Image (cartoon, rainbow over all chains, first blue to last red; front, side, top):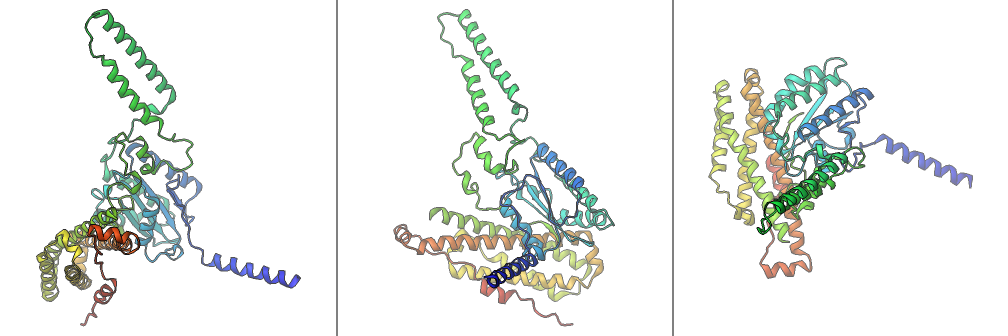
Length: 283
Length: 171
């Protein structure tokens, strides 16, 4: 009995040992809530939080989703090249909205300089972040900072700032639902306010003419409010949703007023990667 | 099955799109290289001719359903791809050219386009595979016969590997 146990224990150890030796970086199935994934362990907790906050604020302002990933080396990902790795992330996480394809994946590989960088933008962003621009930005702006001693975090920051500046306000406020109505109280106040208006207009109409059956403008405003309200209520609250808010393709089909039925087939375009066509620049 | 056919069509036009993008970059590239390496006539001529050949093939949607036309298209594109990689190899010998801003940009664009072509082809191959599997398997093959939907030819990957091996550069 003891021998069998020993043999089993040995087998178990061997299995565990080999699996650790060939540890492949496993990525979550969905875009993580934190836009920074530090598999290389190169960022401190504070830096990671700061960068996360920055990327999140950027998303709030522009709806563009910049994802930053660090890996210790390309071998540990199980992919052949950084391009393959980035496309794998793009196909799995699909950052950016389905309509705008405004996601971007930036991967920095390595634990000591010189680091390798690869940036793949979605179709929506590739117009402003062209391959040529990204290559220039990586070589001239990002790498000099990134490869300087202990400036890894700064290198990432510099790149994010440069890209944000380059994209400008291409997507800001385009089809983003108004944020101010997220607050329940404001919603309630508006709702009551509209009812008040309805009664006021109704009363006014009755007073003004008793025989004329005028089309009540209040009906239209009621409908407009109603659809707007419906749209807002389906939107998951930002603070406590388990899955990320950065996968708008999943929930934009809910609050999209156009009610198209093809939302689950990755929209009308064939590409499954949330609009990533494989372009980009880097190593 | 119809959706898969549509998907394959969309994938095909994406492939055409990216190949066109590459072809459009070539004239600029040739001009920049000429400015620094004008006596590399062989390589430059090859690229220009390959590009002209690609440009002469009329790319219509029906192309994708004709196996012969697809093979012809594929070989013309590989020729251009090879000529381009030969050109890029030659430019390694010209540091001034490599430092030129416009050349750097074009190089980045060509690399990016090659990546896009690769991704587009893979997606097309996958889409056609899905479609062909459906058309061939029972019972959907009966439906296929009723509607006259046929198997679509696919990019031949085996061929690609043989053709895309870069030739040895002799000095």
